[in-house]
Amino acid sequence: MNTVERANGILQRISDSSSPISGSMLAKEFNVSRQIIVKDISLLKDQGYPIIATTKGYILQIPPRPARVFKTVHADDEVRQELETIVSNGGEVKDVFVWHKIYGRIEGAMNIKTLQDINEYIESLESGRSSPLKRVTNEYHYHTVTAENEEALDKIEKALDKIGFLVKDSE
Image (cartoon, rainbow, N blue to C red; front, side):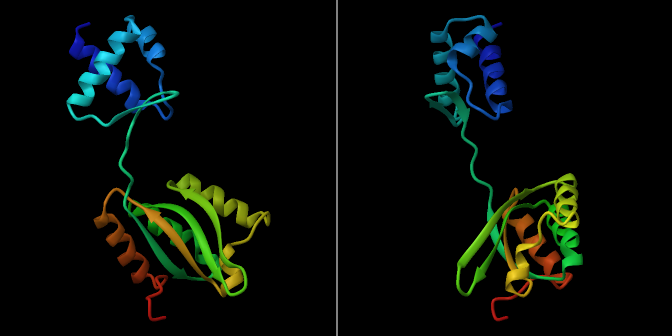
């Protein structure tokens, strides 16, 4: 394996990992010294790859996805429709929050990005183990939604507006 092939392999390995990979682990996997890995990483950085060295190993710096907050209102039996509208248009629902007149912002993480995530969330609501946060504010609530690009967020906004769930600033 030559330097270019090894560097590409290292880049692929770091890209595929959700956690940092140590130089020692990479050295073992590619059957070279840790110093060779350091040189390969330097070569990749010189080529513009955003590799970061942490105390736990190497990671690929991924730029944050665009995000937008949507204020919505709908009935309990429309929760699935709201979430499916967001996900089917390329969005990920990061959280839900409400503005309570006494307690201020109350929020919960959601991290819903697939139909399976939606099914699990709806199942937890239907089991009675929990209820939607929107109930404490007359159904009004907010979602932070991320997507690959601003165009996808625009598409989500239009879709939520079309089904009557989006609340305009003046409402």
